[in-house]
Length: 248
Ligand SMILES: Nc1ncnc2c1ncn2[C@@H]1O[C@H](COP(=O)(O)OP(=O)(O)OP(=O)(O)O)[C@@H](O)[C@H]1O
Ligand SMILES: [Mg+2]
Image (tube, rainbow, N blue to C red; front, side, top):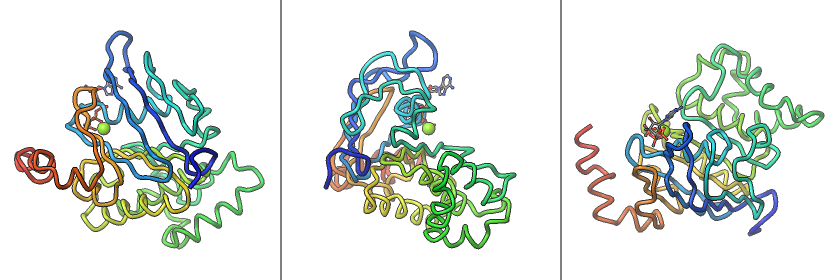
């Protein structure tokens, strides 16, 4: 299992401070390690800074302290247009596809920098996601929620990333579709991809993840192996059907 290189890159986030407005950090001190070819899930209450963490890693939110390293290369505060070149793909929480375009047009957009390889990569993606091939002339907005997330992941894969950042890929999906999308994320690690994802479907996410971090108020709270956190009574009470979930 390679520790460095384009496939299966490890991610190190150290003491990250980041926010949207100068001197008003949302992330106050966050450290996260994602092993190569693993799935790490970030959970935590609304407003904890989960999306901000993903965006800060991707260079979409200004970083004022700490560091981000991918496969040993410093990428702290990377320019967003350098993201793909560094092997990073970001699947946003919302609006991650163009609904008024067809599936094919969405994929062509994602492949626009693939040059002469675009056709072969499109074929690969269609082989991998047969429902997208079958519906390629349909508007992306007509897809089911689960298929839309598959399209968003297919678009992310267009740049052959070593790290995929996914923000709540199962949000709003049926339990079955959520399971399929999370299983897809898990399956990508077998091809050498490293996955960092944010999830609210904590129980389902912990089943497919290797490691889990809990954030609150822009700081690390608890972290551990997914198996250990599933078994942890405090985590169970707060995140796995305990008070917080019953209250919502
Ligand atoms: N574009 C923005 N400009 C200013 N503040 C923002 C912006 N986006 C988010 N915030 C603030 O940053 C804080 C953390 O938001 P973030 O979206 O990272 O939380 P989250 O953990 O992803 O929550 P959720 O579970 O609701 O998705 C919140 O207080 C939010 O209001
Ligand atoms: Mg969020």
